[in-house]
Amino acid sequence: MYDDNRPQRDFGPRPKFTPPEGVTWTCAQCNTTIPDLPFQPRADESGQPTSPLYCFNCNKERRAMNGGPRGGGFRPNRRF
Image (cartoon, rainbow, N blue to C red; front, side):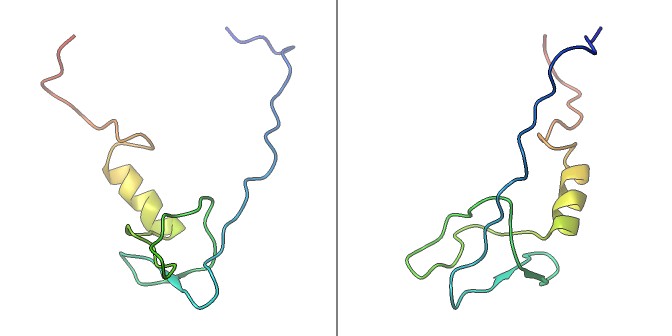
């Protein structure tokens, strides 16, 4: 099915974003300090995030409960 001779993609390491000076990011679920994130969260004028942030472990748990990385959980009434 897959061609083993095709070139492999190397996207390199993902950038890490740290909170601005004077701001501490904490997990909305377990209150653990989040030192860095693989994305830049939206923030207000003071640098505080405008939506909840989750640490790696809590985010992993939330994704598992919601049906995976894209939220594709069980849908019994799905029409085709």
